[in-house]
Length: 257
Image (tube, rainbow, N blue to C red; front, side):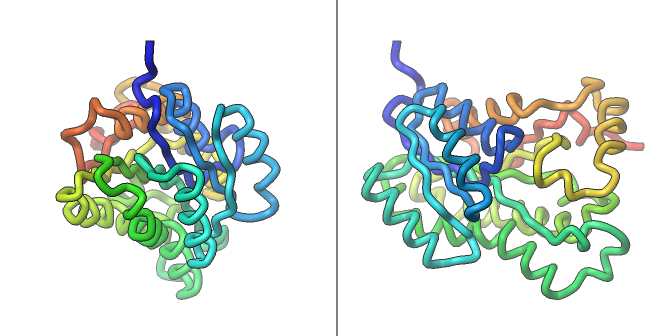
């Protein structure tokens, strides 16, 4: 029996280690037959990403610091050589300086604000634009990861909340632009999960406890659940969905006080 995504190719940005949501997405897509390219942001992460990629048949690894247009160009050129075309992009990148994730939001520095938006938001638009020739006439899918802190005030999330709001707006505008080309753009709003990124948010443990107590399912979500949602959005069963936010948060987003 053939796999549902056999013969398809995908780019995964944001894998750091086994706890990364990007890695969970990679596993779900690879198990469905998709051949993947995984990127690493710097030399410190290279070894870990290469070891993980070795678990995925046919995968390739490439450097990509999204603040470097040259590295993005080199990545797209490598994808052209290795894959010939691209069916999916999973954008799972977010970054803010640790000192910007505590205290009052109005104390956010201009440098910190701009850096968070360049890495966490603009990178989606730039990578999409440069990868478009590879996705031509392939009815592709682009998925990014967001968080409810883009809609509501979450203590100590600060500038990342503003960045996620901008990211979600980007999803809608990109979906409108790319729909006529047959390309869908969606976001997954995942509940809090222990990852390298979340470790920078002060009081994160208490946040997990609160979700488990108040979410309709009375638990936190898992990496695997996020990965399977990504598989859905990258696969044919979601072919009529674009410009949407898919909540994978045990239902927490529906709750009031």
